[in-house]
Image (cartoon, rainbow, N blue to C red):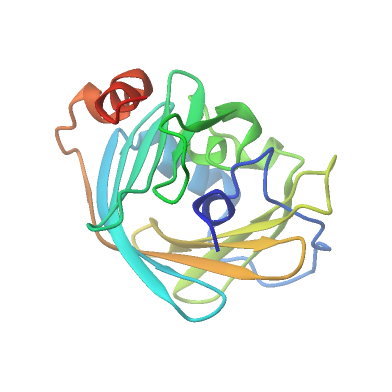
Length: 202
């Protein structure tokens, strides 16, 4: 699965998932408060593709509006959010310039927007949990054929743990976070799409 599919960036990789009456552990308002309290985040991630292949890297978040998914060498792929845009630098592409999409039209905006209020988002179509985790399922109501996004939080304390992008064909790409740290110092250059493009000769 390609990087653009992993993040589900192209106009929101989310699909219809009927809301089911299931036990809810952590309320949406509590998850929203957790996300709003986040400033900076750094974590390792492991991406598990539909075919079982894996890749790893480092995630950096600087709320609001900035994120960086940096893959481990020799993979030079990179997904970056900054300046209201999301840029995908694909090392398999012949172009030195990234594909770009408005951040507000991607699933990343769910956790990067300035004031997160999941209870008011029409795209949250399911919300369930058990003793250890809580999952929210999101969809784009205007494009249900594009897939869905499942985000998992640990319950105690509330912590972003993983997410899965399910594309329109049912293929699943899971991203698991490890060693998540908050309150870390992250330079602004990590999220500067223009500087990154120039450094790659674009």
